[in-house]
Length: 161
Length: 252
Image 1 (cartoon, rainbow over the protein chains, first blue to last red):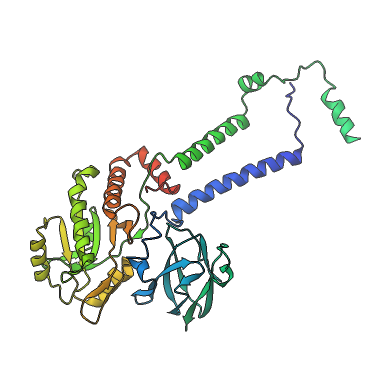
Image 2 (image 1 turned 30 degrees about the vertical axis):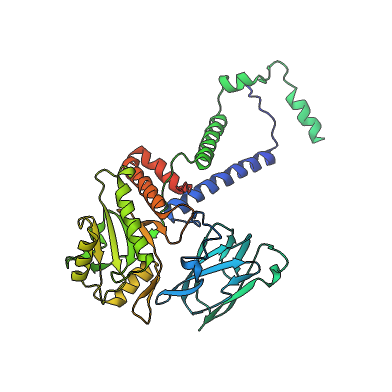
């Protein structure tokens, strides 16, 4: 009895097996992070009205606010071509939740040296939390080209020791 | 040279008919590779379809609600454990508030209560919990008088205050992440926020700023989604609901 097989080069066959194995590893990893480690991605937020959001509620007076000792929230409004506020000061070890939205066009919000990186779309509010353990100045800037003054659109978080 | 040898090998036994017919391969000798491949394909298509069409929608498990021990309008101690198994909508305000911000809060809560039957909630316990951010003024007696004035069902509406304003700061500011601060004139500057907590003590909805959909509509709809999950996520369906959580099939 001979079994006739489609001829596959052994090396090619091994790579096919490796690529299937990689897919299986990815699927298992997704399951593990989701079910075991409780991984969370940024939550879908409800649509807001970019024209009305600055009239009432927390975005009417954007800025940093202390919720409890060591815990802060910062409402940051992006507009062409600045962030309001463009400087916030927190003590070392502070946990800050950033709520960011745009009044006009698409912007980005990235704090250098951290994993805070939000796509700021008009009509949506982005939310990210970060704990500032090291003192120093952290610059944040717009990561989406938003017009002529784009390069001037930045600010800083000053973490005081 | 090698290539040539290969070529000769394949065709050197002309007596055995090579199996080239696909039907023969599929129906005649199913191999484990084929079965595995088809299974993998079905699973992949199934997962993709689930993630794209989102047949089941759930509310996200945002984070655990804070634990606390506070005092209600009857002077009884109420802890977060006491509300286990109860769907709870938390709000934060104070009784001396006369601004339009507070009027809107009461209007929203009453509207939610009126529309609660829309959610098919049945006999699932549901409570409104109002935590006073002005514990120095809002004693249990004052809270009770206030509840009477509002004319609400005190079985369903709990008004809570704290012994210690510092503790309250950790519960409301630290735990629920709701901002409040007393002004020089004694009034409070605070955010209107509604926090929906399920029976396991997990925050499932946060309503912090005005969206295109009015707060009442969103809250009522979200309670409905939560009720549906509680009613249906049993047995094998529980796995489907867990998959909905895994694939972020969140209700809008």
